[in-house]
Length: 160
Image (cartoon, rainbow, N blue to C red; front, side):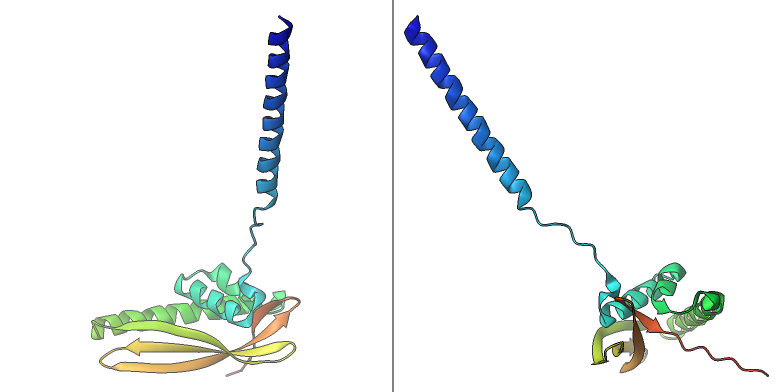
């Protein structure tokens, strides 16, 4: 009888030790998991422009507005102007697709052209196909807004 209880205690100790080791392995693996980083498209000048182009392609006005640096009192002016541009852009695309069945427009790349302490110039390279292939580029000015990059807004008013 004495011999049996000693074996049972010894087995229980082994089981406890194994459970503790298993618990340590689980805890160690949990601590080594990489933290999920939050993606910030405005962390770089190129990221800001890519976010704007993606928002424009999706016709997402809220996302487009987030890409610009402007004073809140000018938001309605900017929103109206972007809406006009999107409507005009949509009309042009409809016309091109009707006239040129093989029409396509593709952003090839977005590259940082120049960077300064609080501003940068980003160039967008694109290809457009109608009857022939046309490649070109345009540049956008971006400014640092605290730690984020935003497209610079230049407002102009005219009287007729």
